[in-house]
Length: 240
Image 1 (cartoon, rainbow, N blue to C red):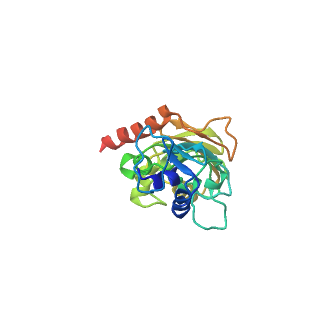
Image 2: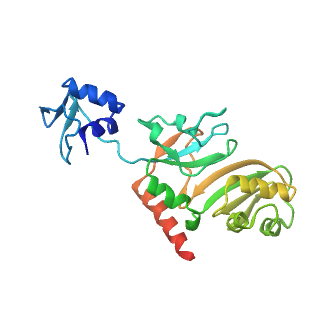
Image 3: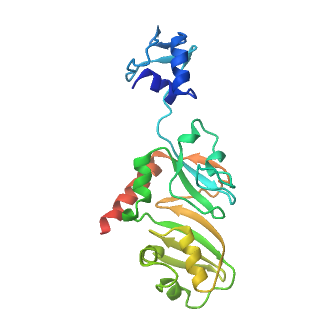
């Protein structure tokens, strides 16, 4: 990797700022002052800026307990982006893996690994998502068949919406979906006359939201969780 890019990847420096600190002679590679941004940094090289050793941030994978009132977007909006809740370096590089509506709460994955993200959100992979759905009125006796009925959604959204439905209470269910999105869930229940009051994402693939992770809090995924999410997506995609 070029030295100027290494400086940007391992610090808050912009490309122009990296060129300036290089020219000032404040950067060393293996103890030698290096002013050329084109210098190739190799594995095992020690890069220091003003005497402090720099390390590449690397790819990151996090779970975040999304509170209501935040958007899964980095674009300007009337609502704050969920990325702003993260206390990490270079958070502008991070993206949510899929999106939850502004009033939907619960598990959202965050990463700067585009390939990993695509494997999870690609419709062909059908990575399962589990939602706790709280409704405005008591559940109809035939709610299972109503949800399975091809009404309120287009064919593609309907096919991916319901993998399983479990009654939790007289006004709540646990719904497992594959290709659908949270607004599809709301639209479906509105179409059968039982509007959704609250929607909470509990699980994506094999990874469930930590019970002790408070709204707005996050943690890094373990290596097992990262691999498990990618693996479960690959397995789902082999059913075609």
